Length: 223
Image 1 (cartoon, rainbow, N blue to C red):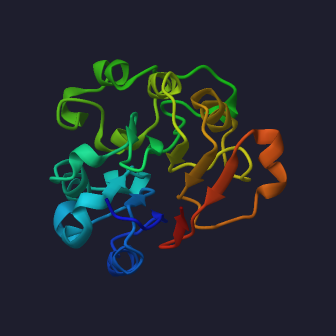
Image 2 (cartoon, rainbow, N blue to C red):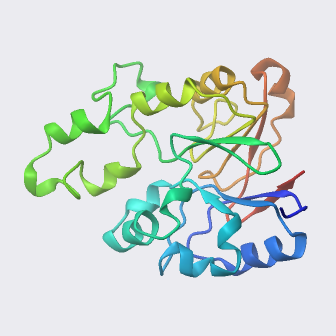
C-alpha cells in the first residue's frame, strides 16, 4: 500500500501531467478525479504511470461527444468509476461517488418540480430509437443525475462523498447533496465542476460534514 495522502484532483479537462507528478511525488495512496476528465486517449493510457491508484467520477463534459465517452466508459479503468457505489481503500477509508450533473430535462431540484424520470430506464423508454446512445438515453444524458441513483447511494455508508456538482453551501450547489452526505454518514464532501475552492468552514457545523471544492486542474491532499 502506498503510504502517502489521498489526492483529490479538480476537473482535468484533458491535462494529466500535473496529476501524475503529484501522485508520484507524494506517493499518494489514491488519486481521485472529480469529473470532466475529457481524455484524448483511453483513460488507462493517459494515467498508465499511476493507474492502480486511480478512481474517478464522470462530469458533464465527458458526454460532450463520442470520443470523450469512449475514452472514459470503455477505458480499462471503467470499473474505477465511483458513480453510484462505495469502495473501501486499503487504508480503510470508504469513498462514495456521484458523477454527472442535474439537468432540467431529467431532474433539477431547485425547480421544486417532480423529476421527469426516476431512472435512466424510464428515460430510455420514451427516447426515439435514433436518439438513443448505446441503446439507452441520448449521449448527453449519460452524465445526468437520476433520482434513483441518489436514493440507492443514500442506502450506503461512506466516510467521504465525492460529487461533480457542488453541495448546498455553494451559490450554484444543491441541498439534496447535503442530505445525501448526511444519510451516508459522510464526514467530508469533495466536488469539482465549479472550478473554485471556496472556504465553507463556517457552514460545517450546520451541515454536519466538511465540504471542499477543488478548482480547475487543482489538487487537494488529505491524509
